[in-house]
Length: 232
Ligand code: C5P
Image 1 (cartoon, rainbow, N blue to C red):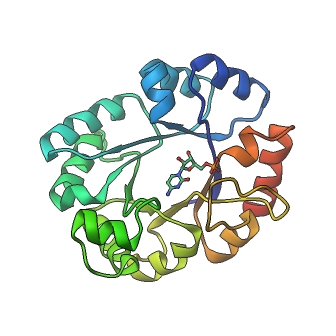
Image 2 (cartoon, helix red, strand yellow):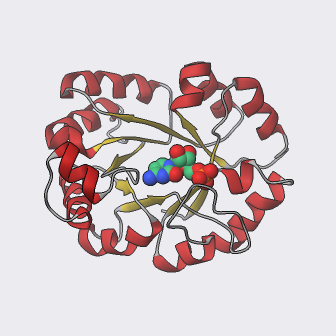
């Protein structure tokens, strides 16, 4: 499996997204479509970007009863995405059902990635709101292990956690890491950040980069800089 840069297309319309991708001309970056764009533009945006030759990470973070998730994953399988995700908090039964729904007739499936604890959840909110009392880093690793035991391909995690995830779940277990910033760039609302080069060093498999590329004066140059630092 190769390292790659995934561009988070956090736009609220099909027009804005396609205008952004048009700037890349011949290049076909791996694209993340999240809830905002999917709920505004629907499955058609996935088909359209796919038809343009991009790989797609559909970031919808499913979390429901196993049967519902299985059937929903079967729909995403037919959209021919390359990577999608769910919440590990849905339990192993839900994760196994999701994988069944996502698996094609030939036994292959798009990469299925688990969200462990959202980075917006901290120790205090986890203890008070979710009644989970263990240290959050142990909870994250436990959820990663449950995902691995359910047959999933990897987890979304902070680049700072990528090494520990690989140590716990094996080096082939994929780490997809947001929170990436250029050394001379604006951190925005991300707190714990790493440069693409540091993410490579620590062993992230995919970095998800939004505003450092989408808000750059020259998005194509910013994307190419990410690729140079992370992939090459
Ligand atoms: O603009 P920025 O590079 O911060 O975008 C990061 C992308 O990764 C966004 O789409 C954001 O929703 C997503 N993400 C994140 N932190 C997580 C999980 C996903 O920033 N823990």
